[in-house]
Amino acid sequence: MDTAKKITAAARRLLDADGAEAVSMRRVADAVGITAMAIYRHFPDRAALLNAVAGEGFADLTAYLSGRRFRGGPEARLAKMIEIYLEHALENPRLFELMFLMKREGARRFPQDFKAGLSPTANLITAVVQEGMDAGRFKIDDSWEVAFEMGALSQGLIMLYLGGRIDATPAGFRAQYRRAFRRYIHGIRR
Image (cartoon, rainbow, N blue to C red; front, side, top):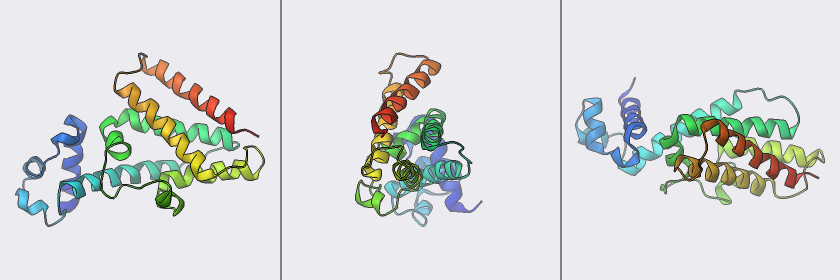
């Protein structure tokens, strides 16, 4: 494993254990067995390192989403895709927070970055939404906005749950999450 990969892996372990606040250049360097100054050869600052960790999280999520064969119509496929988002978030809560909620320089912004195709996860969902619109299953609308709203619904519910604001067991939360998406999908049906 090259040094940059060792650095991001160490940063990810610190993130998973103690949150983004715990990811300092010194702590990462100690975990890798290099000097803090050596990290700067690979990452100009802490923000760049955190962006690299978030980027790997997006790459993993995108690979998992794009590597699956989703069967059924657009509704069934969207339901399966949002389920993957949920599982990814519950398995990696601090990474999920870094990826979607923490203010990061260079993070993708809606609408320009999304409509330019720079969000690999949104690209996949938007394609299914657009397919549903083209097939007459969903109301004709801005497919990018619909996909973005679905992401916002997902992220909001997940963060409320992870933040202790939803009093539910994991199974109860999963059921609530699925109901929320069924309601949303019902609202965009034609």
